[in-house]
Image (cartoon, rainbow, N blue to C red; front, top):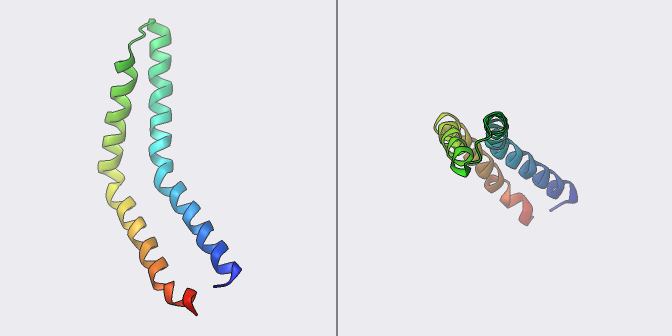
Length: 89
């Protein structure tokens, strides 16, 4: 195993984490800001009002992007496993 292979593998793993976690985090951030602005305008301080929409938005995102996320993770895993014999030599 060369140093370049290890760096490429680590770089690919970080990009994979960013690609899979990024959309969910972005949706939760946007929903949280909108709900916080609504709570600030109406002075409603209910914790469930901020939690439930985030969970619903994340659930919808997983239904929409779930197959793509799964296929991306499977493709990356297959790529890593096919390069495994090169690591041994």
